[in-house]
Structure formats: structure tokens, C-alpha cells
Amino acid sequence: MSISAIKAAFENQIVVLPLDIIVPQRDAAKRYRYAEFYKQLAASLKHVGLIEPLVVYPRGPADYLLLDGHVRFEILKSMGVKDAKCLLSTDDEAYTYNRHVNHIPPIAQHFMLLEALKTGLTEERIAVALNISLEAIRTKRDMLNGICPEAVQILINKQVSPKVFSILRKMKPVRQIEAAEHMVAGGTYTVPFAQALLAVTKPEMLECHAVSSKSLEATSTAARSMLEGENESLLRDLKAVEESYGTDVLTLTVACGYLDRLLKNPKIERYLARNHADILQTVQAILSDRGIRAFVSPNGHR
Image (cartoon, rainbow, N blue to C red):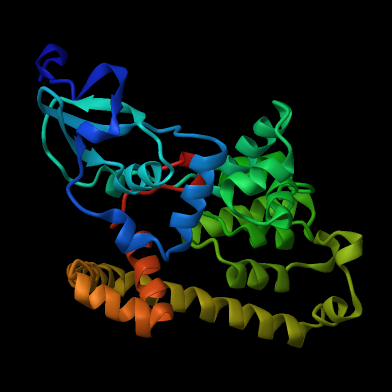
């Protein structure tokens, strides 16, 4: 297909439209107002403003169908905002764009935070804007301290748990690189896996402050064999998970779709909110993680 035959999905310019002429397809606020991401997004819109435009389709004069950004739309209205930046779609296809949006990896978030701090923003203001603790901001800021650049490059686009870096920091640079390569090869970036890699690391490959009497005991042949056996067992478990992953994801997707339809019933949602708020919040969190919502990560300001 030639490039000239490809139809643009959006207009080139962003326009500012009154919220009164935008017609949403659902009431997102009632469904998600108890979720943590809703509170974070509300805080972001209040202190930073709308970063990502709403996506609308022009159906006629003063009539725009809201395709994407329902949560942002409802929060803006509740804040008394009269108009907002919008991106005009050339098609009225209303599928959820965010199902195809990847969350920003933790390393990318770290660099974005450092850039924000360089511009003069304070840690306190960022914490308030994202509705997270100041300690969490500082943890993200210092996340890569003591991590060698080569290991960072290996993991830069991976969804690595931030706590993994505190474990890698106990290793010398060469071992950090090896550990990062093991994570990529195994396709897992969790804390238990990083701890297993740390456990089978030779004492000479650990930073001095990380070498304790407990780690020295692991240098004996028997202890090392035991740790290596545990590591092999962990890798076998990971392989078993990989084999059933497709079926599990399909089952989870069907279940999430059913729960999503249930919560569209106002009576069911009100009952859960009144009698089982914790269950409702958990279900909403699961649905949000599966992409059944109009939200990205806090850095996306969706």
C-alpha cells in the first residue's frame, strides 16, 4: 500500500471546545471514582492541567462525540472547567485506544522525573500533582543510584519492579549486567527472581557493604548447590507459567469483560459501593490493569 493511500486518523491541529457540546458515551466518574488512579488523575488535572487532549468525533455543528478520555472529561466537569483541548478524529470508531498503549517503564519514569526536577519543579509539587507520597517520589529519583549504565540500557524498556534495583545495587557492575541479562532471557523482572540471582552470586561479585556473614556461609559447596537448585526450580516454575499463559490470559479477559458489564448496571455498582467497597475497588483496579478504562500511567496524565 502506498503512503498516499493511508488515511489520517486525526486532524493535524488541536482545538479547544466547550465541554457542553461534547457528548460522552458513558458515565465514567460513577464507575471509577473509588479507584486510586481516579484520585491520581484528579490531582494531576487540578495541579498540572490537561496534558493529553480529549479525542472527539465531529458529528455536526456543536455536536462532538467523545471517543476517548471519559474519566478526564468527568473530572474536568466536576472541577467547573468550561472547555478543554481536543483532538478531532476522522472516524467515529469508539474503541478504547488505551488498550494499545504501553505503560511507561519505570526507568523512563525515573528519567522523566529527573527532567521535571531540572526545570524547577519541586518534589513536593510533583508528589501533590500525582497524589503520591514524597517518599515515593524520592525513591523514584534515586532508583538508579549505584546501577551501572550497561544494566540500565538492558532494562530500559522493561517493566521492572523498582525494588529490583535495590537488589541489583548490592552487586558489582559486571554481575548487575549478568543479572539484567538473566531477567531478559527469562522474561521476568520481579523481586523474588532478583533475590534468587543475588543468592547465587559469588561473594567477590558483591559490593563490600552487601557481604555479610550470612552471604559468606553461602560460599560453601553444599549451600551453593542448594541455592542453585532453588534457582533452577524457580526457572522451571517460570517455564510452566509460560506454557499456560495464553489460556490464563484468555480466561482473565473473558472474566474481566463479564465484570465490566456487571458494573455497568447502576444498581449493582451502588450495592457494592455501599456494602462491599473494598471488593468494588479491587475489581475496578483489576479492570484498570487490563486496560478497560480511559487511563494511562500518571506520567501520561490521562
